[in-house]
Image 1 (tube, rainbow, N blue to C red):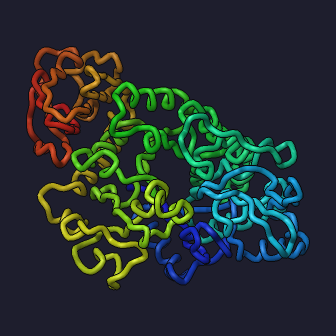
Image 2 (cartoon, rainbow, N blue to C red):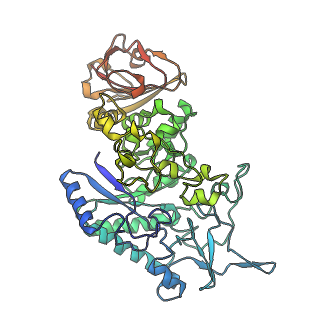
Image 3 (cartoon, helix red, strand yellow):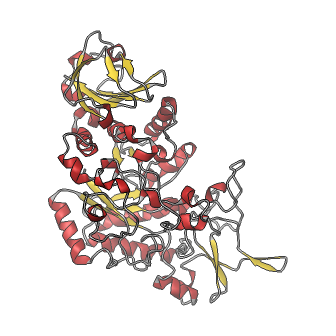
Length: 518
């Protein structure tokens, strides 16, 4: 691990768990103070760990001083947010457009004091900033400089494609968005609507470039810019474009949103290969396989496949983004309607909350088997702890002979091996049953037998729930070839260090195995 990304810790009413900010240059007492932050930065530098902080430039809290002044039309803040009069239909006042918020409500709220609607892509407590006003971006630049002065190493930029709605060279688009056909979703569901204007990235490219320019001019070393994006595979160009405007790691979420337990090997390769070919040669690919907005890996793919994604993404070229808890196989914590606190879940009501709430993926980290899994000394935490914490926790896994945690540490160490750093990559699909990923200097797999140990890594994943025998030697173009198990998924019960013959490899159901040259 080389970098830690910290979620928002700014002063906030906590309507959306800190993503509704009242002060971009403060720390909420809930999380500590600047002495704590300075100590964190100091310790991280000793450990050679980069600290990246969440930055939320798309919107503020409706309690932010800018918004309170904007409501009162106090200059220059009167135009810091997106305000419109709305429209009159049959004598009734209605919002300017039909746009929906990400949290399944109308994206417009009437302010009775200002007598206008304001736009919010998330909750009504999170009004969107108006980047058509250049003063807004100047304010944001000041805030970036503040945190650079505090010693941070970069910014993860929340929901960047939402910054500028529609064509940035035109006025705000007061046009309804169309519906996706045949979704069977209620009209209030955000995903029932095509995000024609509300998630148009064109204006955000210019903003990102302006931030890169300021950061580079202000800093003596390169700082990471990590834009959060959610694009469909057919929108690949929109994602890749962020590299051209100063991004280091435009977050690639295809494995989060489009690779599922039922996906085939062909479908997986089709998600990986076009992306790798599109990434500029001087840039690094990245693989997000879990986050705080999506179901945990062990729940999504099943317990037997809890190690599969870290093994796959580590063998792929580039950077891996891991959601805390996935390294120990944490699972979604089922929540009742009573326990639900997440805005999209609450907005969906008691019949649909379980389809939209992110609470199950956000339960406290399971440190040990003490009160509240060691996350707190209190019996009650901000979300209930998963009931399996007595047996599934970090302390137990550290003591165990083998565990998800031990596997994670060993897999991450692979990133230092030459085959992973520099090797070519080859995918082999064995009858939609087994995926073989080979990393070595030559994608034609010539002279495999003469390679140094650090020049060959092979990953095998059994996509079925039945055992399979694989003749890897055939795919390596050798007759007899001995290999060693570097690491295997926990429930495969294959021991690391086991020597195997490449022409006769036994893969248990759902097993993932990484092999090295003996």
